[in-house]
Image 1 (cartoon, rainbow, N blue to C red):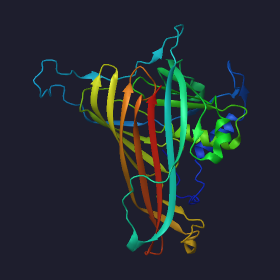
Image 2 (image 1 turned 90 degrees about the vertical axis):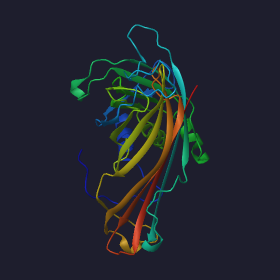
Image 3 (image 1 turned 180 degrees about the vertical axis):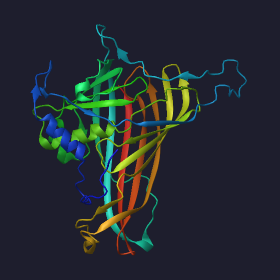
Length: 348
């Protein structure tokens, strides 16, 4: 993947994601009448960078400390949620909370703590989603789609936001469509979004950002046979973010039929090596100066429960905060950027 080596430092309050902005422009280009209200715009597919899965441990199917004869056998874990064409589709409902926070500040070197805090101030978006998975159609090579076996489609119910000033805006996005094409192991190839025609610009932007953040933590299984105790990493680019690369570590803690419980750890790092500061309070003298990444660190915790017959986790929460420290010509001043994300899932 190619990334630029420098950019302007985002202002403290507005840290808009470039992918969100470009998606809004694409979606506004054309509209379509859907079978049910509200009327939404035509969905435009956006390719997802292929992730990299590295298996660190396949687990130990022979580890049976209780001495039982029914020790678990290794197996390929894969989603089984796709309904073939012509069969009745069963909709599933999910409640997702997406919490995001961003803070940046200048601090003197002697007072700097390079370790990421455990959380921060966040704004929470609540997303009730209903939908199902169908067997994916053949890839459209004209649009450079990668092959996929599953096609997930979800419809947003009435969302809400912890920022009450956004109430009317986010309510205008009820009926937002979101979907993605993926393999049986969960690897996404394309995402698509379609906003209601009557959604406000602000509501559309806020909801798109939350939905893209939701898809920045896909559950992707290895293609090898695994058992309890298996551990693997998934390297990906955070959807909707141009500045952070992400490594997610999954560890299987339980496999019970179609239900898999995972321990989840997240590490993020800058995808660019330098940037320029623009009018940050406490460091006005550094405006226009090139800053270099000196340190990055992530604190995280999380567990997810996955039902392989459903497209989203049915329970669990993953929370993480990434701190990136930048330095310039003045060795006594450091610029700190903290990004906090929390994703919570419940069924129903």
